[in-house]
Image (cartoon, rainbow, N blue to C red; front, side, top):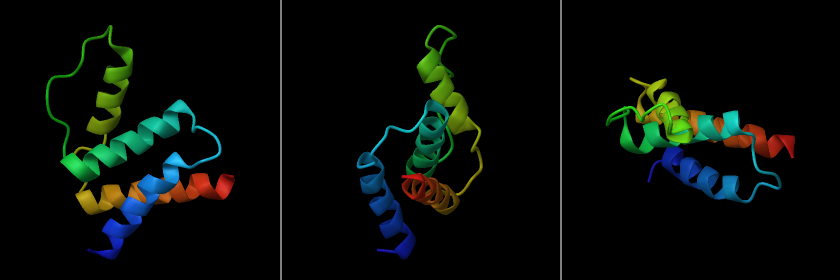
Length: 87
């Protein structure tokens, strides 16, 4: 397993053990990095305007269109490290 993959998996474990729940913009950023890293570019239809949570998630993920899996993993790890340093 690559070093990046190990750091990504460790960051996934670390994020659930944070003392405080991150704010919504940070959660969206983590979500979009995770989805881009694990599934690639956004797929499926954009949710309707009445499903606000799904719409925000879709928009955050689609904002990373074209980003490589490795870049997304790096972004996720960096964001989790930032959160850990703020504790």
